[in-house]
Image 1 (cartoon, rainbow, N blue to C red):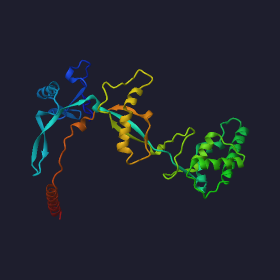
Image 2 (image 1 turned 120 degrees about the vertical axis):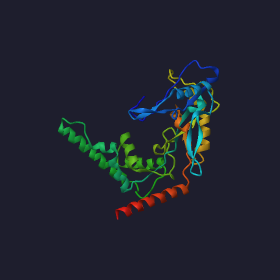
Image 3 (image 1 turned 180 degrees about the vertical axis):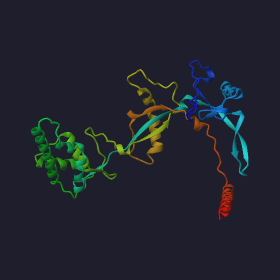
Length: 331
């Protein structure tokens, strides 16, 4: 299968009539080393299963044993003296269903901004689309109306820049409400009213992220997350959660029931693994996602000890002698 690619072939045995001893369990069988060479390759594949290999794999499935090793093969592992040593290869592993499940949690940190009306920050106004769009018009057919709208927008841009001159550019504000109070006073003094998108754009241009600034909060007093500091963590499912999982695919509530069950588990993970390093972090539980992964390669990985320094040095020395001999022949 997939003989013109380097893709492995995976065989899934799925049934809803498992015997009692297999219920809640998943058996992984590694057959990657069970093969014999074909006389002629098929695409870029040249391995095939013999009857003996097939029988061995079937026995793994039938015996249903954890850490069962193959009787047909073993890994050739380098020993400390440089001589190969044959080691048994584990080809069957048993897992609980929950072992492959995980929770992807979103870890938030608070938004902290400082504000200043320095020339450098005022120059950032042109980078804000809502501010730049003031001097544009969607009226393409009527040139007079188009020019009038553009002129009005440019005048408002000039008025905004002029209003900012009422604010002392030498002061750095590390509290957003305090700066907004000064900002609104400057707009009132200039008799200028801004649409919400334009106001937001101006504040964004004048702000910079600052770990030492006060936390920003929304109109309801809730902490605002900083999207630049947002991170995700992969958390295993709790070992004590009952199976099957309460996944409500046909319900509008989705995974709400499951997420309520795992919330304490996620909070415990946060306290143990995240808060010791980032004390102001929290979990956005409404963004938690449930996933499953079966990492076959990871579970059947066999460590290959590196070659000894003496072996590497001997190989380098031999190569140096070969190179010197080749150069001698050229000269």
